[in-house]
Image (cartoon, rainbow, N blue to C red; front, side, top):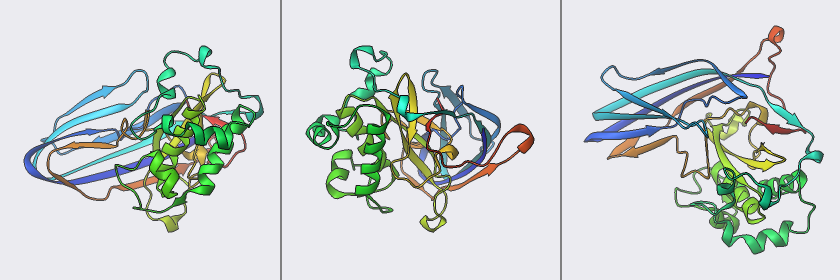
Length: 286
C-alpha cells in the first residue's frame, strides 16, 4: 500500500460580474483508493455544490464567484491499495464479451480519433499477440516516438496531430495511446492524476494524464509519457479523454494563475505503507 499527501492551490482573476467554475480536483474514492483525510478551503462568501459520479467516482465542485480575485485550496491524504498482476496472464477481451458499460471506451472521442488511426494501428501492432504485452508495446511506441515538450500543444491538439507532429505533453501521449488501443478494439480511457516521481528539472509538480486499458475484466494503468512512478499515481478523474475530465471548466472571462501543487509520499512501516516504487507487474487501482 502507498500513502500520498496531495495539496493544491488555485487562483483566478475574474473580469466579469460573475463567473462559474466546475472543478474536478478532489481525490476519487474507489474500492482501491481511500481518502484518509481532506480539506477544501474557499472564501466564506462562496457556496459550493457537490456532485459525485457513482460510476466513475469523479467528484465535481460547482461554484459561482463575483468579479475580483478568487483563491481556493484543497489538501488530502490518500491511501492506494494497488492490484498487481502478472501481465503474461492478462488477455484482451473479444468485443462480444466486453461489458456494456465498457463499450463506450471503444469508440472515437473528441481527442482520440481511433477511427482515423486504424490502418496505422494495424500496421504497427496488428501482427502482435493480443494481450498485456501488446498494450505495453503500444505504450513503449508512444513513449519512444513522441518527445515531451512543455507548452508545445494546446486544447485543440488531438491524437492524430500528435502522431504527425511527434511532440506533446502528458495528455497528448495519453490521447495517442488511447486512440491506438481503441483502433485495435481494446477499451481504453484517461485518468487524471499528479506527476509523482517526475524529474524536478521538468518544473514544479503538475497535473498529469495517464491511460487505463481494460484487460481480463480489470482496468490497468499505463503512463505513456514515462515521467511518473506509476504506483505513486492517485486518481482524480476518469473519462474518455481530457474533454471529460478537465480539472477546471470555466464559464466567463477569467484569467487563471499557475496552479500550486504538492505531492508527497508518506510512509508507515508498522502499517505496511511504503514508498511508491517501479514494478514490472500490471497495476490496477480500480
